[in-house]
Length: 461
Image 1 (cartoon, rainbow, N blue to C red):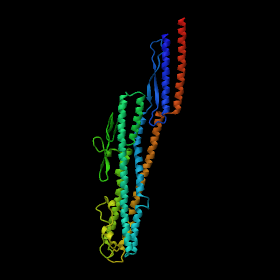
Image 2 (cartoon, rainbow, N blue to C red):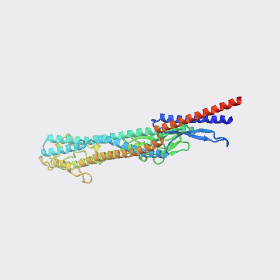
Image 3 (tube, rainbow, N blue to C red):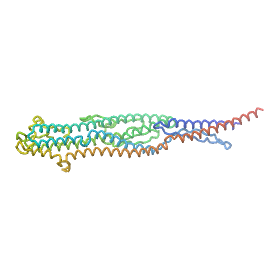
Image 4 (cartoon, helix red, strand yellow):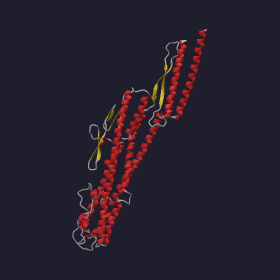
């Protein structure tokens, strides 16, 4: 009879196992739309027989296991930084494109109006109204350069604000991951609770990988060590190493340093942080440098002709624009010479000391088509057009790269979901399988119970 009781115990254990399997299926179905959830599976093991006359002890639940593919996880962490970087660049440069304005309705329009005013002065060299118009258009082009630099500086500060926000996100995730590492290690590395912690850990690492280029190393206790750049630590076990953003320079732009105070901005070359750093420190300064070259050349060319000519009184001309020491900062400091601005009669039109001459005004008007940029290969308008084209191309390239990288990520996530994601069809099949197994074990349990009852009745007689 002890054998029948052992069989009854085995059947009861099997009922619990099938019920546990149904619980796991229910958990998967409940979390089908939970972001970061990894499909669970119940692991069973047969209980070995105790003698040659024993078929076995039935089944036992070994535990619950999350179905993960570490290779696909790592591939996703490697691809995300590049896609997020291009997204950050494209979004930032879209604002820069707006700041630069449309072709024909921005700084090029003011350039045209400026040269047109000298053309009208050449038609009537003694006109006080024409001279006043020249001054107004000169001030307009100078303020146009200044406004353009101010808008680009604003775009730079916007990127810097994004950098500050990204650093805050990095530090928050670093704190979260180090805390999860500690919880996973203290839980012993197994069990349903640990799998939930690991889901949160994996999702946090995924988010962090989109912010900057990281390397992830799995620990034996279930945690992860995370470094970035040239091996700079962010998370080591339950220890965290935060980034620091410190405002510096006249614009108050932040520099990034690691936990040891070492500057690390140059080591962050991908992710949202990498994209924002590139826009702030390279792309926008490049555009401003082109504007400076354009303003410096314009001022130099106009001043050269203006100083070689004669004003309305027949005196030698003064510089029309305030002389610039160099190209750096020229766009933001360009201004009409205050002395000339105070007296329209000082505007030069004549190339010789004759009140009716218009040679100088005509020469300045002809600068519109003069090849004075890029080694005498392009006009001032061409230079502006190239700047607009470059900004548009940079944005378009970033968008194309974003789409290309996004497709790769979709493919990797699709492969990952096919392994780790919850399939309702598959879970429905598992539910039927466990249900039928439970019903069969219940019938077996009933049969054994009836057999025991018969045996007891026989012995009782």
